Each structure stands twice: as C-alpha cells, then as structure tokens.
Length: 121
Image 1: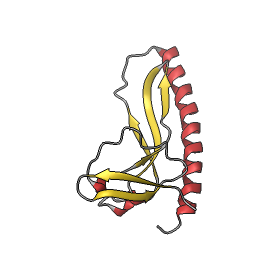
Image 2: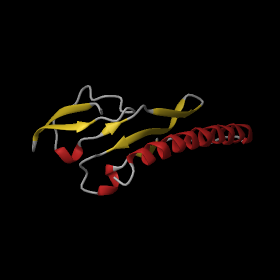
Image 3: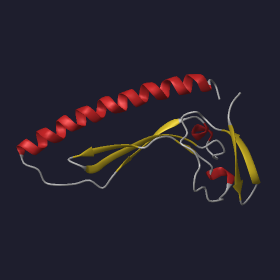
Image 4: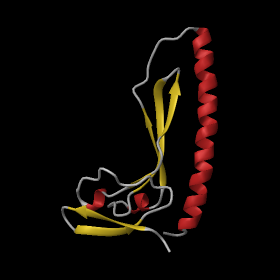
C-alpha cells in the first residue's frame, strides 16, 4: 500500500495524494494552488571549492498543467557561479565537473528505475 499525504490548497481544499518513497516530506508546506503541489527529493549540492555550482533533486508535480511534469524528473539548477581561473584552477574545475558528471549519471540511473516503476503514467 502506498503512503499518502493530505495537503491543504487554496483552490481545492485538502488534497490527498500518494507520496513517493524518495520524497523528503512536506514540512513547512504553505497552502497554494493544487497545480503547484510537488514532491521533492534530497537536494544534491554539487560544489567547486566549497562554492555552490549545481543543485540536483528528484521532483514531481502530480497536478501540473503540463502532463510531462506528472512523471518524476531530475530538477537541476545552476547557481550563478563564475570566476576567473588560472590553468591549475581550470584543471581542478574540469576534474570536479568529471566527478559531478558521474554523480549525475548515478542520479539518472535512479531516475530511470523510478520512471520504470511509474510505468506509462
């Protein structure tokens, strides 16, 4: 049996929906429109020398107006990272990007399993 959660909305009242196992919960949920309800997974902070570079997390918007968002996806946001680097630092950045690419591939594998479980939804 799937775990469900009921969240208040301003346009549809309380909405009960299945909560995926990867969802980190809905603490701090502020009622909004049903279309904005979402599930979010653990945020993976991908950094360079301690500075934010990319954030990645599983996400799903079960009532989104675009049905493509009903399926779980990997939300990726690039921070406003910038800088001027010398040759050594560029090599360090390139090495970091390689590590981040491996991490993103692992997340893609996890996402593929979740999407397969979701089936044709």
